[in-house]
Length: 265
Length: 360
Image (cartoon, rainbow over all chains, first blue to last red; front, side, top):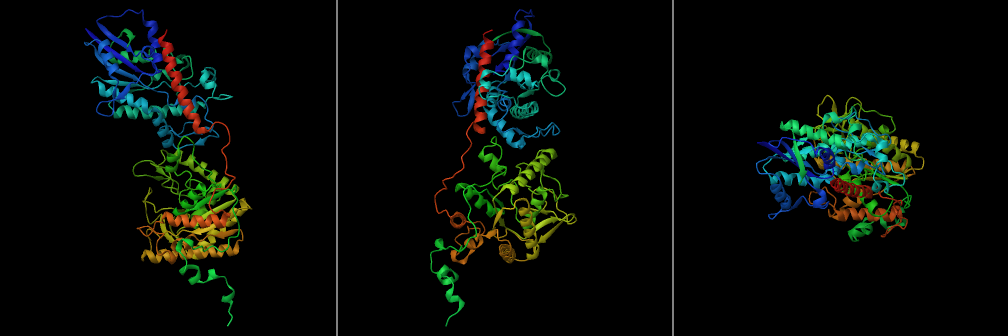
């Protein structure tokens, strides 16, 4: 028997994974071999669940409740791989609605990326620090997860931004609409650059902690660097089932195994 | 026996004006040609000492005019680290009259230096005219050029719209490019760039050249802003090092003397300029060195306070207290509230989305 437990822990970007898995519930699979998915159940544990908690000897550790849950739910004879989808939305805080003082920056790895007319140029270092500060709580979770188990941990890159301004505007949740009289998303190229910056900082952090950073599937990205239309979800920040399925297929190919069922953690 | 001295006020007598009164009460400002109003846009530039003036103007409730305040995304500490708000624009220290003139000329498209970009040893790029302005350096040539373009546009706007410009002259010594005479704030190699005798040369500006550069700057300023007024000061901070092969005290005395004399000439020729004696207040013998720190260079806060107390008294008519017309922030959502609100929203809806999904 050879089964791998792919244990997904994280926040809202899990939605694309769940969307992809739900239709597969009835799919048949080999009970002796395959990748079985265990997905953290936010409904059961609550949106306020603390993944990282203060440790007895100072610092932070992975919530012991989660550790216990994993040990209980994932069969002991499974090879385990943890898949992190912590956070991943820090950049969206700056781009779903245009900032009252429009800004822009130059991406070091793509300095020829279009500039935004009329926007104040801000130093890359300033934006980078800002994004890092916003993402810090989630990056803590990545570190405590890695420290809690000897098993490999993979962090999945946030999905590419949506390039369709109309879609973003039409699918802005009520909370965003309420923030401005005439809501307008930030320019698409700013969404792109911030996504790239965010990914770079997360990657840097992940690799510094021995976590593998798995980039977004290349086939999900259009020629400009945005999420393929077919992979959109139902709102302005998350990818949909098609995208989630790409990630699952990518992991299955990597593990050399086929789908082997899923359940809530 | 009557002489002209008898009719002069007591502040013209050393014994009465200095030797016999407490040092903190010395006030060498006997006449100041104009008064700043609270809403006057006051811009600053100059050497390190000018930063004190900028800081205190801001704290005193005056309209310290800053055209490059930095975006709210960089909070106060980060923006300050990146040189925003230290002076009215993000030019860093302007030590010499030549630097000031060339900065203004570059802003108005009158001078395009050949010296373009320096590579930093640890990676990144520096602007030769502001080598320390970007912590860690600019990440690409494109970022540097875009920032420079934005910066020069801001300087243009500053000169065109300011009411008063306060400039602190600091040095006569500088390094410049042999190719076109572009003056640099630091010797190449100190913070980026590579020094070579072929490309660069040391210059210790003489009185005539400093005067010529300052006159050219004043005329340029007035040509774009006919109502601008200028306050000149000389930094009391001694040279940290001289590139002349002579004692640094001798070089310091020359520099400060030349700069002080230039100021004297300028205020005689341009009635819309004024000289404020920061140099005299700090370095006058009456202090017995009290206003210099242990290193005999840094000015103590007590000294800065003395300067600013007299500046506010004579240049603004304000003695203590804050002007009633303190500028108010426009109503509406503050930009720095925007991100906090958006972050909360993103986090809220993201968790709710997940719960909703879990219910399917």
